[in-house]
Length: 156
Image 1 (cartoon, rainbow, N blue to C red):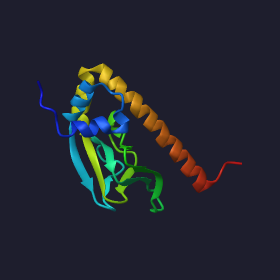
Image 2: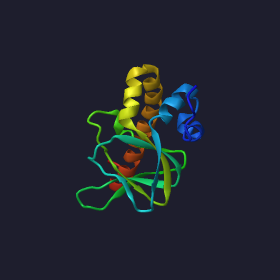
Image 3: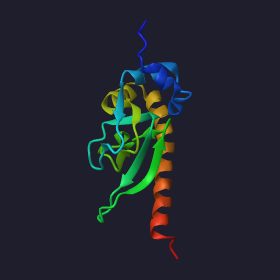
Image 4: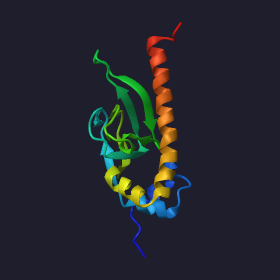
């Protein structure tokens, strides 16, 4: 019998993974580690390689875009039990936004290469994760749309 990872109980409690089979939680734990970010720290930048994603266990993170004017625009703010990053799912595997910790933030970081390999070997795991991430991607697009409407006004 495999020894349970110290991260496994944290994964079991994260809302994003609720209802996922226990054996899938174990597979995820094999790709997981802890990460901590200080207030103001850049977690990732648009255009960089997206080779991970984060389950936020504590803290606050801003998802930002930076237009040519240089002033960052916050598209969405994430907090405890949210998920940061979906670009690891889609080739070219590059971040589409910037992410910055707004306060001390603790996360479980999942290695995307490790996880993509597990999904290739177990398509049901891939499907279950894709279900969850599809909803998250839709929420991000809707938040971006609302932010742009606020910024530029409604079309006439």
